[in-house]
Length: 288
Image (cartoon, rainbow, N blue to C red):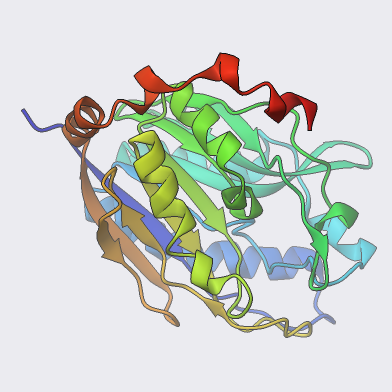
């Protein structure tokens, strides 16, 4: 018997690319641009929706400008509260990636998870933080300290991985071991060095762990940094590594796919990776 869950991903360009504009104004414009796409997801019957990395603003990490600390907010907080209203309105689980302020001077790259009745279930904090040309994330974020939680939503067990996390198979395996059926990876990645990995690593995680993956990327070129073109192509992939739906490279878009959770059982009955793994044989992982 099939267990179909309709899932959606939103990719979007940043509407204001002007450093002379106040951070709060830029954030409001980005939020307002997403709301019609969230409404579209609700009208189309999406049951689980994920937004892009730090969805309510630009990817500001090419800078090391302290003004962007003002973009951070508590989780739960005002944006989480607004998304709780949308979740309840449409009976839709929503994953909300935000710049989180835990306390004065302590910030994380996080994602809130809201259940279909509007209940705040918790958050994931990005574990792996890059620090290289164009991606000065250690200036803005502490590494996550909350492990790899899986959220038991109304429709499925959901895990979150964020952007650079996708290069690390260890956390992807932890999410599977913790019971994830669908893993969402909101990202901000530009054409160039890592683009060829975009359609390799996450399907590999899906196959190695026998779950679905929803990968989200923003679109456009963001001023004034111009680190490259965010190439969109958000997609869903099934536990066999097959692509189910994919967005364009350059358009604001909602991509929707029906995910049959029964396939997880079918795949895991064939490939018994969880049965055959040998954690007692992996001591080197903890020594190196």
